[in-house]
Amino acid sequence: MAGLFDSPVRNIIAVIAYTLLVMAIATGAYMRVGWSFRDAIYMVVVTVYTVGYNEVRPINTPALNVITIGLIVFGCTGIIFLTGALVQLITQSQINRTIGLKRMNSQIDDLKDHVIVCGFGRLGAVLARSLRASSAGFVLIEEGEARAAEARAQGYLCIHGDASSETVLQAAGVMRAAALATVLSNDAVNVFITLSARALNQNLSIVARGERASTESKLLQAGADKVVLPTQIGAERIAEVILHEESARFIEGLERSQGFQRTLHNFGIELEMVTAAPQSAAVRMTVAALERQAKGAFFIVQINRPDGDVFTAPPDTTIINEGDGVVLIGRPNRAALLTSLFESRVRGTRG
Image (cartoon, rainbow, N blue to C red; front, side, top):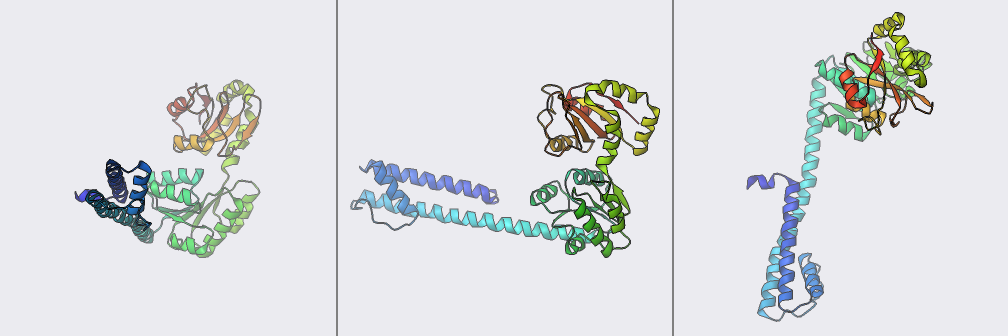
């Protein structure tokens, strides 16, 4: 019985069911003494909700008196309990949120020599998984409310706020942190975050993401120790050697190219191209959804449509269609994963 009242949602469902049952019984009772359904349900509703309108018919018999008294007692009790359950739901949600935020802030305050990750997009999610796998202490900063909630749901410490704000960076423990990675897709914001973080902690190791090569010098001037250009890493190599309509011939040539293999090996990555077979798991999925399902095993750096269209560094919302050539760059030993997603023979270059 004690467990019945542990959940506000269960309480609301139970009280609504109880109130509807009382209303149904009362409606049937009024109809049994000769009232029409319309008059009966009207009387039940105005009584239960204590509206106070006049009676639709005189309550002038003992049977009607008993029915009405029972309706008032049991029906109004149900409404009182329903109101209490709704208040409990709202109050408990607020209390849980407050307690959760206090616990999270306390855990962040205990961090030292940790990593601050600004942004929980595609790269931020992969970085968070890698940091968790290595048991490194870290905290995320994400401005988007939905993504911040998603990060917390995955068990990450995540501050909902603007990472370019000094107040937010201080809340993340930037003065005690060992490193900061700003991996937002907006170069201007990454520059500003780098400036703010460097001003707060001169000893902080800062790794910044850049979408355009021209931004690299600005990020370094702003105080970044290292700039990562994820799009360029894939695009510079893929654009030179891969066209979708001749993918098989190029891949075969790459397999024999020791120089290209060494280049990939120096980056610790593998380049592969797969074709999205009809009815495969990848078809109709977006780039973001496919990378999430891969759990950081690879990034999609180019999509070649059968009609000849080529999308280098495709947006997250790009949809994979049947017959698309998908160029991937990522960690080794993922052939089984690619086969399961694309149901296609994988051919590529390994470093």
